[in-house]
Amino acid sequence: MSDDPLVVAPKVLLHDHLDGGLRPQTIIELADEIGYTDLPSTEAEALGWWFRDSADSGSLPRYLETFDQTLAVMQTKEGLFRVASECAQDLAKDGVVYAESRYAPEQHLRQGLTLEDVVEVVNAGFRDGEARAAEAGRPIRVTALLTAMRHAANSREIAELAVRYRDDGVAGFDIAGAEAGYPPTRHLDAFEFLRRANAHFTIHAGEAFGLPSIWEAIQWCGADRLGHGVRIVDDITIEGLPFATWLEAHRDNARALAEVDLDGVQLGRLAAYVRDCRIPLEMCPTSNLQTGAALSISLHPITLLKRLLFRVTLNTDNRLMSHTSASREATLLAEQAEWTVADLRWVTINAMKSAFIPFDQRLGIINDIIKPGYVPLLPETS
Ligand SMILES: O=c1[nH]cnc2c1ncn2[C@@H]1O[C@H](CO)[C@@H](O)[C@H]1O
Ligand SMILES: [Zn+2]
Image (tube, helix red, strand yellow):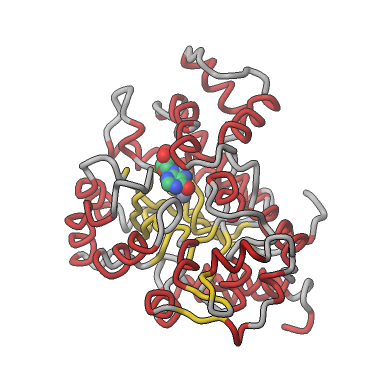
């Protein structure tokens, strides 16, 4: 285990894609087993960098093309079980104590599996990974979020699947995929079904597209949380200037967001609503740099939103494509945006409060695992 203190710090992930977090070596071995020969490299380190570099394109649609390679080896029960088990183990090893891992069941049907097969085998993989992590002394709990793809037309069916498995490892629902041109209101039928079933869902919104997408996700669809939501800053002014204009003028000052006087910051009505209602933002800094949704770690809006006490959470999105981990995201913010261990504890508790499992279970993890886990790192909080 690394001795980086942030590996030891308990962490919570609400936004981590199962098909964006494979070990390169596993991709190579699974490809070999099924006879898949289109991998860009059969050497683990080179393959890892290929994902990182290809995803570093500045565009969300191009970032998403790299998933063709991971999905190719996630079409059999063996492949899905192994990937899910390793996901739980890798997160646990990095100090994650609770994770919601998302994937789109409809993308795993190419070799004859049914939607139910996919959900059940991924759940079995998570249980296996949890058991191995506990044996290794790093217990974790992993639940699934079922994603529907926003360009497709089967979101209602996936929403029904999520409700059918809600007492069996599935905590909620999501929509993902290219954002521009596919507003969340295309899937109102799914969201209305979920709300009538008292089920939870998040929506990727405000990543590649701005405020209209966030507004629709909250006010038309009723999302419990926002996937990314980083573009909420488009509804914030600093010293009378739109956020983006102000930031452009301060882009040479890496401390601009850590130091700006909050008295000069004003929220528009949508930003105020998001903050007033404590709507969780599932923020993923490194991923945003790759898709062009943010300039740098030091000038990522997450630091301003944290200082304004939005309900910020810190996530990985795709550990493989972004070459990252929960600890690494935290370390980057500590090194480049002046985040403290107290800030990491705060976003971790925010995330656990915002999880889709029952309230008493969330509270149990906060009180029994997260708070005690920070005592050695922050003795004054004991
Ligand atoms: O940051 C993102 N924005 C939108 N869609 C994404 C992102 N990361 C992954 N996916 C999409 O979600 C699917 C299910 O996990 C992935 O296959 C990918 O297409
Ligand atoms: Zn995502």
